[in-house]
Image 1 (cartoon, helix red, strand yellow):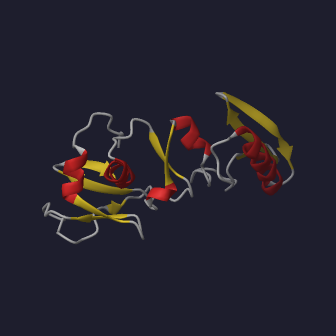
Image 2 (cartoon, rainbow, N blue to C red; image 1 turned 90 degrees about the vertical axis):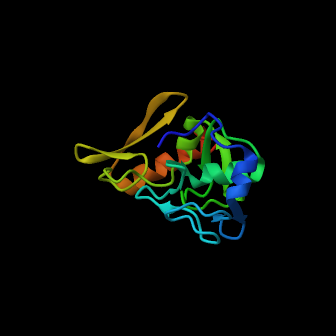
Length: 167
């Protein structure tokens, strides 16, 4: 789902559709939006990728983007990062504006197809290689006997090179 940079709904329209529950970061329907949007119900569903999406007038929106406009009055033109890495935690204090590159700096876990199971670690013959992206360049941090050692090197480099990360 692509982020929207055109303001499909005004801040006032978003306020008329939802209340915001700051305790759990949910949007609550204020208006009935059939078929699933019932007044007082938590809006949205959690997708396979962990993000909450909400359907409004035949279009799907990420809940964190709707929370942002609901609470700030502004449509975000950049990415919204979940500080704790949990894509379904839409509490305003867990959200921040950032570029795509900054958002990628805050990844907490490896992709499901990574056989090492560790972020920044890949198999290299009979050893484990640590690599990181920084300033648009892929840097090799070395090869190690175990994936845990490679991951430790990656985390050390991440703390230095990625100012947006929260590890």
